[in-house]
Structures are given as C-alpha cells and as structure tokens.
Image (tube, rainbow, N blue to C red; front, side):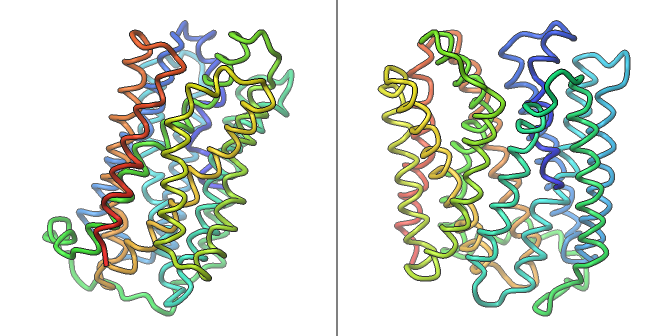
Length: 370
C-alpha cells in the first residue's frame, strides 16, 4: 500500500505533460527526483541510525503519513514543474522510512527463512510500485487527480496497519546509542561488500527498466502501428514481478539464496542484451519478452537484500540495509539520467544495452563471495 506512492507520478505523466507543458524526456527528471529524495532520506535515517534506535513500526507509520501528504499535494492548483519535482523529492524522502524500514522489521522476525520473507515483502513492494498504473487504467474518464488521492489513501491505511498490528520482532537488537561511524564501517566485511556490490549491479538496471516501461510500450506501439493499453500492460509487466518474487523466495529455500540470485541476475542481463532484437518482433512476442524481463529483473532484489542482511552486524542491520539502499538508489539516478541523455543520440531500440553493465558487474561481484 505504501509503496504505491513511488510511481504515482509516472502513472500520470501524460497528464502532467499536457497540463504543465512538459517534454517526454522529463520522465527521467520526475523519476530521479523521487530517487534523489529517497537517497537523501536514507542518508538521514542511516546517519542517525533511526531504524535501530527507535520503534521501526512507528518510524514506518510516520513516514507513510508524511509521504502520503507530499504525494497528494501535487494536485493543488498552481503547482508547476519545479513544485512537482520538490513534492516528488519529499515523497521519496519519506519512502526511506518505508522500504528499508519494512525490510528491517521483517529481518527482526526471521532468524531463519529470511530469503523467503524478504521475497514476499519485495513482492508486495513490486505490486505497490505497479499499482498506480492499474489505478490509471481503471480511472478511465476520471481526472488524473484520483490516482494521487487513491495512492495517498492507500499509504495512510498501510502505515496504520503496520503501527497497529506489527510490533518489533523477537530478533530485534536495538542500537542503544548513536554510532556515526557505522555508515563508514559496514563495508569492512568481505561477504557483506560482495552482496552489496551484487545489489548495486541489480539496481543499475531495475528502476530504469521500471521507469521506462510505459515509454518502451508507447514507442513499440507507435513504430509498429499497434494498439497497446499502456497503463494496463505497464502494471502487468512490473506487477507480475511480485509473483516472481514469491516463487523466487520458495526456490531460494531449496537451492540457496545466492544461486537463485545469480540465475535471475544473469537472466536479466541477457534480456538487456537481446532487447534490440525484440523491438523487431511480433507484438505477442514483444509483450511476452517484457513480461519475462519484468520477472527476472526483480527476483534477485530480495535475495540480494537477504545476503546483505545476513552478513551485516545484527545491531546495525537496519542501518546497514539503509546504507546499501541509499547507495543502490544513487546508482539508479545515474542510470536513469544516462538513458535520458542517450535518447537524443542513440536509436531507441539500442538504449537498453547500457543496462547490461549492471547485471554483469553484479554477477562478477557475487561470484567473489564465499
């Protein structure tokens, strides 16, 4: 419910373009503002070790309320592009108290089976991220404002559910005092660093792919003179990755977290490399390819987070997850801006070859861990 705030702006991008006179490549700036807000928020949460020093359910609740507030303010009359960027930045800032804190809460409940638990959790994140596209499709003739109202309402409900019904887990080890050095010391562990680097490679690809799914669909429909329900297919391509996370978590218990993460990361890298061929394929094959890519691109996310959590100092697990999230999302900004910049110079179907750099780096890093 709370992560539906993330791509709410992307779901109504055509309306923002029309109402504010934006350019299509402003999608990159809009998405990057959320990511930059998230990065700033994670730095703040990590520097003050908030998730380890305070009740994480309360942190989650307050963050959900404030994120919902800044998300819905975009509908106010007189809001311009700069205001939109600022509001999306602030929404991203408080998402830092939702996503990594949610993982912290889950990790406090599972000493064993954390891979499956985080896979279910990230599956929910994926559905939330995709949900605004579905709301946009169902809203039909209604104003785009309703997407913002609905996602903010969902976030308030989700935050309230966590606060009322999810207490700190039995394996929680709260940090008793502020440790400013934690932000610098977490990467001294070799396996923690390898897992983190694997996560960074994954993040180079993930959010750029998600952000550009509607653009990819629109481009294909235009070039092939095909009719595609862009909001619905955007939801399916992103949202069905949540089900993939579910099955990835189950497989990780049988075959190992690292092995399934490596398979998924390799598969998504291959998807990047063959993407130019798919733009020339029939529509059914193209959509099937995007669905499979949407599955592969996310399966490894909770598994890599599991490897990070399992190799972190238990007293600093929340802070460690937050730091890794912060750096990972910093990478997404670079990736999104690189693609946005290359759109001017590179033929569209070859753009996504650059995303393969991330999976290649991630696989190489994971293979170095024990």
